[in-house]
Amino acid sequence: MHFVIIGGDAAGMSAASRARRNAPDMRITVLEMTRDVSYSACSMPYVLADEEGDMDALIMRAPAVFREKQNIDLRLGHRVTSIDARAKRVLGEDAQGQAFEIAFDKLLIATGSTANMPLIPGHNLPQVFVLKSLDDGRRVAAFIGDNKVKKAAIIGAGYIGLEMCEALTERGIIVQLIRNAPTLLPWLAPELAGMVEKTLIQKGILINHGCTTERIETKGERLDICCREACFDADMALMAIGVRPNSFLAKEAGLALGASGAIAVNRCLQTSHPDIYAAGDCAESFHVVTGEKTWIPMALTANRAGWAVADHITGRPVRMEGVAGTGVFKIFDVEVARTGLTLKEALRAGFDAVEVVVKSYSRAKTVSGSKPVWVHMVGDKQSGRLLGVSMVGQDNEARRINAAAVALHGRMRVADFSTADLAYAPPFSPVWDPLLVAANQLLKTL
Image (tube, rainbow, N blue to C red; front, side, top):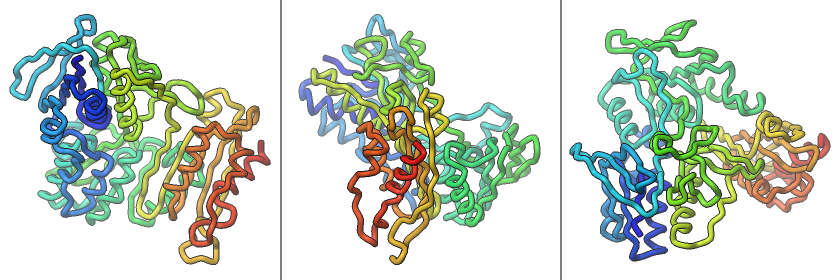
């Protein structure tokens, strides 16, 4: 069997390594259009925060390891331009521009996602960046290092945009945050989002809500980022307005896409062609709360899906149960965490949903280091099920959210979760953990 993989990051290399363990004699070829594979893209803001940071330190495993120790035919600089699903072959160009054609028995599309870049005037100026690939990180690091960057504009306020607020501030750079929405983190309850915004302001971040960037112009060696209402000057600009699934190859090959634009797959990661699989940021998942297909690009999902594809093609039983959409990020000394559905998402999914927002504390109040914790919890009145939790605080909320994520995977009712035996000791939690306080309050509303 010839197993061909398009894309050499999380899903692609996880699938290649797992397939080699499962089938030592299988022929495995990985086609990666860049020069990097198997790296931690999520760590790039933290490397950029350090003047001595090294982007190459984020490479988890060098290409030579895959080739020499695992006997994987890893080809860098190979861009696949089309997939002939009927003939079961892929076509493309190598780093020298030479055409290639490779036949496959099984194919995995692991092309990831692409950073959104609005095609406004000035989007392609050399001082305008995105932060998605390791090469993006290298370019940002080199620009900051080679130029006296005093002020940066961040357009957008998702996970990467907010993490870069901290990273650039650590480098002594003034940050202007420009976003088109009227509030920060609209998926958070106002009390929780307000805590994040207060922290940003305290740290000197200049926030401009409701500003849609219409053009970027050069002004000498600097930039003007212009909205309808005003223009903001900066030495560089970072576009951080999210990502979209890189599903173009699949679409052109006639494979089915989902409503999100990601590649539609079943619970075995097969596409509409049974010998072609898709995994990672380019593919859909199933949501454990709704049971419906969703698109939530996350690193753990990609790695786990890569394993599942390798298991399936080597004859092992596979059924991907799905994702809860668990995510965390840190902005200065504030941690933001979420899992499951927000109230709006739950109502849209057809639940008879209600919510509570509670303020608690991370430790016993008498213990040094106890901090306020805001918890937003959503449940279903009809079934009593727990549907989602969000948390904002300054003391290990990123780990607390895991208890709620496990509850969602277990399809627990709020009543059951409220009786969970969560750990207690004054240095770690009040007697009533913040999650239990929220669950008890939500029970009353239910």
